[in-house]
Length: 564
Picture 1: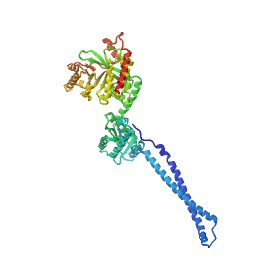
Picture 2: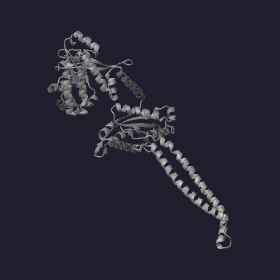
Picture 3: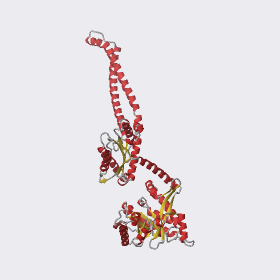
Picture 4: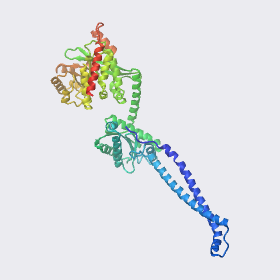
């Protein structure tokens, strides 16, 4: 994201001083010229008649001193008038330059829109100078989606072209009594008057913005497409005191909150501000603060859910599930904090810390038990992801054959080439790869054949429907049949009762997990369970030698380099 607008406040504050000095000099030169003219008039009235008579030979020459005074007066008049004209021209130039500086201080020089400071002043004046109950105003905050990628992939000149085109398109739709500003980066804001009985007019305007701005921007040989997220807030949501005071900052803040809400709901859309959004944002900020603090205090810990062979009923392994043990909020599930950690950019660090702890825990288990770990799509964008996993295996001396990495279908649509190279790199070192939540995404049959997966996991939303007479059974049966044809083992998630378990047993051999076999447990509870079952590592058993891991990691780095 590029930042183009600048703050010209200091220039504007310093400019009046030369103007005052120039005006004083201007007036002084005019006074000198006028005084010289008056003196010339007096002197000329006394000496010119004698001078004329002397030229005719009827009188003696006039006094030399008076003649010199007359000549000096003429010189003063010429000098004063010339100086006056010169200073007047300089003053006019200075005033024009001052006006230009003031104009530049009020606009964004890239898009020619108002800048943040001037928009706040204009918006406050518009709010305080009108009856907002009878003629409300809507603040419309616009943020381009994924604009950073435009700069990263195409260069900043392409980003500038997109910003200019966006400003032109918004301005073309805005009525004459509206305001448009670029707040900075890829964020714009409009102020739009509307009739109280027709708030849908603002909806129509926002929808037209989305359609118009999404049209490709031509830059050199590129056709760049961007979408936008829009947040809308009305002066009707402000208190009477805030409206009377022209509190435009409060209005823009509410529109900004609505815009972020639109982004979280999928982008390329608009949302009106609601009071609940502000409470949600405040809670989210508290969660972000708590997540950073919790990571520093090791409050995120692995829990483990049993994975069972449905045919024999034997325990085959565990899936690691993250939990946040917060002193203030209690135990928090991953559905709450994982999306926030992804947005914050800390998911990779959090995941690696949890995996490191899980490897230590699983090293105490029987070597026949596997460990499954969910991977965020954000982590799969890292080209060094496979190397980081193998480094953790080396550090904690955990056998790669016991590890099952689970990735979701959404990962396959972002960069399938990168995903393929990482999967291949990990599988070459013995790590198993499962396609998680199968059925909820858009995996094609050709992708399943071309990508070297070791297992499919059927999403719990389909498994839960097996207890009812609906289409879920046919859908699950089709997946099981397809996986059998592809020679891919299946794991069913979300088994919560015997009815579902029995239906799945009738479909063939597979693994299963869910609350029917117990809730996810912390490491101590798992250790007690395994001790009772005789599935803890015996004292005489040894781990795989460290040298084998180093060799595997070195091979993986070579494989990654070839794939890159």
